[in-house]
Image (cartoon, rainbow, N blue to C red; front, side, top):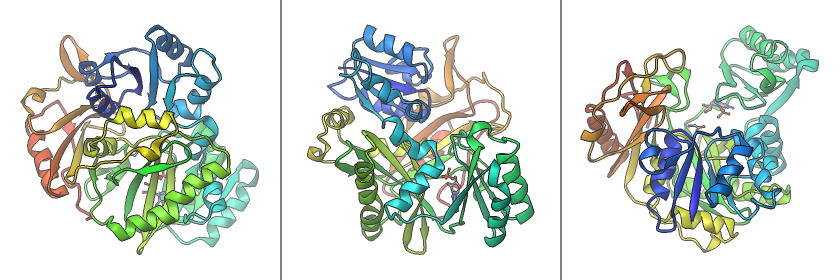
Length: 423
Ligand code: AMP
Ligand code: GLY
């Protein structure tokens, strides 16, 4: 069948790489894609939220499956758009419908869902401009650090963790009254701070049954030792070494099962990936967030470890038949390191030629913010490419990745050399 992947990052290159291996995949399209996807598929220069252009493409190219990479089109209702159109409703769309995508689109919606279904999460209250004074009083009752979350989508920048009470109040005012994150911060969730190590769990569901994919841990901060600004993710490893059988049982019983059951009880139609961000408080997992898509760069370590035909799994999701799929995972560990443009996540330059890619033989190179210009691969974004390797453990996988990175170059290239430092 003909398949369309929406998105342009390392996640989407990894999806394309995995799906292109399937005998079920005839023609593969990626919109808008990047230099990596252009080697495996046909890139189409359409925005992921331009539903009318996506419709034209799907009809012209006889596309029967659409895999949605990023959250924006899901929150804006791309799945509903397909279901409500008689020319499109036969197409399998991987990603939840808009009301279920609120799990990522609204922090308050996610918190209410978690509390309603008795899933462990941090205590919280939410505030608007109208009751900002109550927000200050609530902050007075908490001890630092203070966690403020813009309710809506804020491109990963909407969460602030502050040590100082006055600063927390100032930020709360900026978010609610001065619209620091635009519409995304007309409501703010203030949350109890949870102290512990993070990991992510990925679940595939057809809305009724589910399969758990390998765990992963990403490194979000720009600086070594987890310092400096938050980024989209500077690297990841899979599996998470401390996620042993005992912990996975807790995660499945206390979090995954009530989540999938909760979707059904609340009539939230869901066919796709549930990305559950967790923090360990002592030995107990707590949910800090849901995302309604795969993570980036977590995809770059999770999918390479999946031995199944991914198109077959997606077909089963479409047919409400995932219970009949047996997920097979590579025992090896995978590690990926993101190469970024110097200056990212703030100001950085683009258009730098990337050299050395052809000399990489024992690692996977997933392009992210990279494009082809005059037959050369050049940088076009902050996160440029992710280099994934396998090993008997994450240390060996990382060693291989770092050795391969030595062969790559672009002006002002930066990456973290300390992944796994906290394990
Ligand atoms: P989120 O976008 O909700 O995942 O938040 C971004 C990051 O903020 C998370 O990856 C955590 O590192 C941190 N974070 C969010 N909520 C909490 C919390 N309640 N306690 C401690 N850290 C948090
Ligand atoms: N790496 C975190 C995310 O994709 O949201």
